[in-house]
Image 1 (cartoon, rainbow, N blue to C red):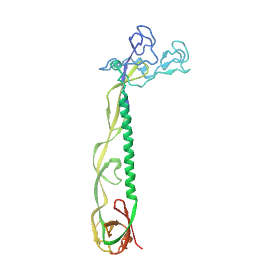
Image 2: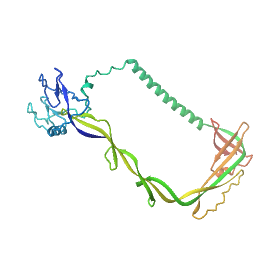
Image 3: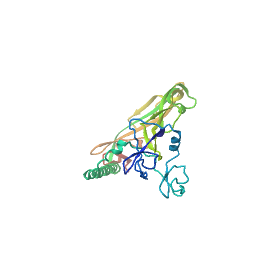
Image 4: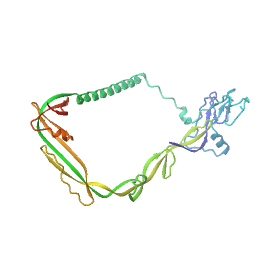
Amino acid sequence: MTQKSLGFIPLIWVCAFCETRNPGPIKTCTSCGAPQPDDVEFLQVDEEQFNFIKDEALIRMAKTGPDIHCPFCGTRNPSTADLCSNCGGEIGMGGKARESGERVRTVGEAQEQPPAMAPEPKKARGRSFTIFTILGVVAVIGLCIFLAFLFMRTDDLSAEVAGVAWERSIAIEAYTTVTDSDWRDEVPEGAQVRSCTQEYRYTSEEPQPSATEVCGEEYVVDTGTGLGEVVQDCEYQVYDDYCEYTYMDWVVVESVTSSGQDLSPNWPATNPGTDQRAGERTESYTIMFSSESDTYTYTTTNVDLFMQAEIGSRWTLKINQLGGVQGIEPSN
């Protein structure tokens, strides 16, 4: 998401010695004179509304980047400083920038007691839950392996051809007008666009043309200068032309079929009309087997294999552990 800046507000820090609330940019306590700690937490005072800063100098200070602690005396200096304001040391000789970018808490949130630590029994339950989850996953994997074994392992069974059946079909296609819809930039070349409407297409993290900005709740982040930046996390819902269009194409308008229960399969006769043609051909062949204990059915698209299935001929069937026919071959 994009972080949208709304402006800057003053922050405070609380003196660890006298609990005085001090303005964020002030480096020593205004009451007892204690220095601002290196790990000080800046807080937001007004929890109801933001008191945005108007002073251009303060705004520029907030935008320059987090303050830097002097590597020699620890004094906090603006990010633009070359020499320490306290000892005169060179900031560039190892000065450490303040932490920044974290969400700022309000004074009320800082005064709340930290949540109690979870009791040890709950941790134990959490570990138990994890163990049961792992065991469940292992059980599912084991079941899948077992089922695969049942499908893959086969036994040979001798059976006799008891019957056959076949079916052949030819699709009849017509060259006609087709109506479809898609995004404008996905419309096929040569198609005629009939109408378009603006529709939601995707969400972008960056601003885009024809996008609707959707932002979340305002919150404050620490700039590392004693001032806070009020921001919102925003995303952009992009809208685009979704169009209905027409084009010419070959379309299946009917299917002609022939079938039988013998070993003489044939293709059906076709008589395409004007602007029509014979299209895709499909074929299916079924062989019924009978053994001493049961009957089995095997379907294939292999016409050469089907043509060998003379009624009464003996075949060897590959039967898996679930009773399905996995393969067949004529007996010698």
